[in-house]
Image (cartoon, rainbow, N blue to C red; front, top):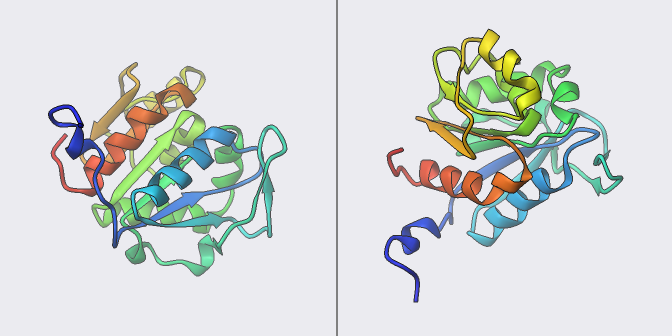
Length: 185
């Protein structure tokens, strides 16, 4: 039997559509954990790349994108998730990927970044005046882009959800699900 409040944490996401961004040198867990967790919750998950037919993780694990950022529309997604690793530095070189993040955010939909994923938030200019966290090595980048940095496992500021590292993935995923379900932060 779920503990009090736990039922709300395991929300059903049928009918929701999530984009998970991919590029070379992604952090394995930060891409695959959300992909499988959100599929398990009933969401449609689309892996969106910058244009290549496939990418390798930091540890060589392959991912094949379902679509390219140039061929998707922000209006079709309820959330976009940006995994870390070194992939975000490559993602932000693709205007279409940056535009997708910016457009999803502007529509009031959920934008979530973990670890080095904060680099995409900086490039999309969506952290100015917002609370956020990230991997400690890019803290200065977020602060210089106008974010109010907090060192916590997950920080949610409206439709923006951020986390620091793979160990934060359970809290990160719960916060994204809450945001997608309209639960107030």
